[in-house]
Structure formats: structure tokens, C-alpha cells
Length: 220
Ligand code: ATP
Image (cartoon, rainbow, N blue to C red):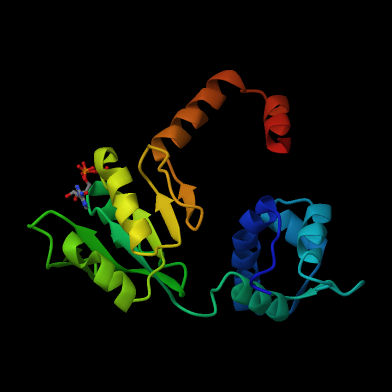
């Protein structure tokens, strides 16, 4: 099931569904209809039904979805049923903020190792996470079976660091640097450019400030 390929747009919605199902489960709710789910996660119910259909018939007509079953199912699909260790490379302002944050909303992913060249922080523990020298990166990634890395190094060294990560056998990179890094086919990159996002938001406020435009944008 975990090898099942679903459209990217569907894959992106899975964490949203999962988060809401956990919320319902924690609140003691046993079942949910696609209409309720739709209102809560702001995805239309036809899309929800289509998304879920990729995983087989998960709902029952007239009953809706069993919250616990569905939550467990997505938990497995998103690999949240076991702990995923993640590494962070470059403990500057942004890197440190992410160490502090450390995905506490999720019980099942955490940054377990950080790497940097700065002698002042190497060998220390920041926000509960040990900071290793870059020379120990390959070994630590292997020991801790880390396949996913968050990249918060300066732009100038982003590509060379990526090359080292590729050699170390990393499978996924969450790239917070503003450059588009080149990677071999075996690596998936998720770009998170905060400056870009904020600029885009400001641009939209200036150029598309009617509700009608907003509706149009949401449909795109
Ligand atoms: P930001 O606010 O973007 O996080 P910053 O201004 O705090 O950055 P940067 O100069 O962008 O700091 O560096 C981010 C971190 O990356 C620093 O802790 C720095 O020591 C580290 N760093 C710099 N070069 C490398 C490298 N080649 N490999 C690993 N870490 C590096």
C-alpha cells in the first residue's frame, strides 16, 4: 500500500485529512461523513471521495467513514505509525528555530541530529538536539537511519552540501535555501522558500484584492 502512487495533489492533502482525523479521534468521535470532513478541511466532498478512492473503498454509504480506521490507515500511509528521524544541516537563525519547533505537533517525526561547521555550536546540544560536525554527517545519517534532511545552510554552499547528501544516500531534502538545488533522480526535493511565499502573499493582496478574484485563485 505504501508503494501506491497517487496524484501529487492528493498526496499533499493526506496530512490535512490525517490531522483532522486525529483531532476527531481525540475528541472521541467514531464516524465522520465526507460532507463534515469537507467543511472542516475545506476540500470539496467530491475531491475527498476521489482522493480516498485511490486507497480503495474506505467509506460505507449512509455511514460515512470510521474515524479510527481511517486515521490508522492514513497514519500507516504517511508512515506516522513509526518514528522518522530527520536531520537538519545548518543551525543558523532559521535552523535553530526549526530545532526549537521540532515538529512537536507530530509524535512521529523529529529532528534527531543537526550538523554545522561552526565550532561554537558543534558538540553542544541545542533544543535537545545534538549538533555534530559536518565530518560526522555520513556516519550519523547511517547510524540513525536518516533518509530525510532539512537544508538550512547559506545559499553559497547549498549545492555542494546537497552533493554530499546525495553521496550519503539521502532520499528526501526539505530545501529552505532560495536556490533550486540539482539532485539525482533518487532524491525528492520539497522547496520551502519563506521569502518567496511572503512576497507572493503581498503581491496577491495588492493585485487580487476582491473576493471574486480570491475564489478564482482558490480554484486554480
Ligand atoms: P539563516 O537566518 O538563513 O538561518 P544565518 O544568518 O543565521 O542564516 P547563515 O550564514 O545563513 O546564518 O548560515 C546558516 C548556518 O549554516 C550557520 O550556522 C552556519 O554556521 C552554517 N553553515 C555555513 N556553511 C556551512 C556548511 N558548509 N556546512 C554546514 N553548515 C554550514
